[in-house]
Figure 1: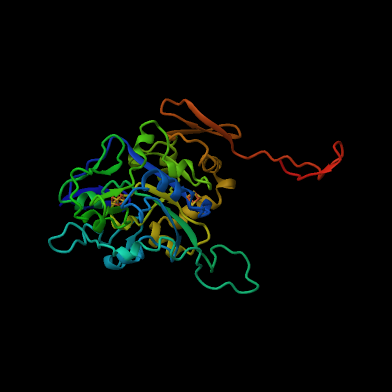
Figure 2 (figure 1 turned 180 degrees about the horizontal axis):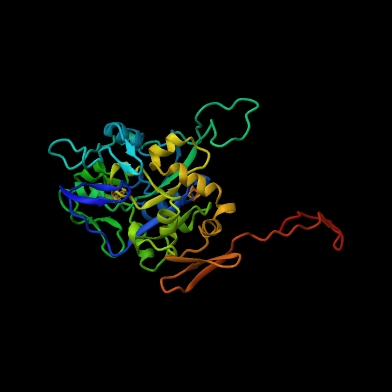
Length: 376
Ligand code: SF4
Ligand code: SF4
């Protein structure tokens, strides 16, 4: 095993291959507070990529209700339980990653789901923790809660799927960091399925090889965001590029959210993969659950996000850019009452107002003699 640096756990760790970061790394931020579980993203992906034979059960994008929802069944509980205690010392992870916890003779700690584990992708949907009693009032965090977690492949910096493949059939593209399965080299051993703790690789029983989310790379090559991003009804998603912390740029929206403001956090960073999809955690959920899912920065992220509109105008403005353009957003700029998405050379892609204008009209239009709704 090589020694590599993982900034999400703030230390070096063991990995099967040496550190080889791509020229640019695909990255995304999902704002959980905006997701309405409409599953439009799920269907956008399904109809684009997985409508063929052997793909019936696959959802490269899925949205599960936490804490009870999961696809495949209990994937998160199973790997966290196998890993054992996961202590953090401040921002540094002191426990074992799945690579460091590998059983003798294996490359990492994993498990292979049963076929039945994929049978109920909407298990636990909308189920809440606790019971709603009469007289309950809104409070933060809420004692009764649930939230929606949208998931795709994280195009990890240290992919478990890639490390586990004995055929070398999985590779990370140097130009954008997207992780792909070479369908010609794959022999269907399913080591990748066993290895990925997020269970984002799927075995096709018809073609007998593995398949996974491709980050819509044909769109990305034209600077267009993936289908599950552009179709997102809740406008929860922003696709861009991430730098390492020491190279972070304030005008890069992903860097700003992840490195500068630290409001967007990776999913289960303690597993050690340095995943590149980041989440703005839900503001109504008790902290211990958020820490288990997103690491020790969860409380700070929630507080900064909650108070952005009064304390951080730049952050509040950037949150308005989510879902406003189909272009990948490498840069952004906040102006007087507006926020703009910019291309690599600073060219304007779209500009939107930070506050939507609202016009209040009289409920009765005297000129036309008709009642009408009073908001345009
Ligand atoms: S999320 Fe899973 S499938 Fe995707 S790159 Fe990481 S280990 Fe591989
Ligand atoms: S389309 Fe957007 S809002 Fe709807 S479920 Fe997917 S991520 Fe959530």
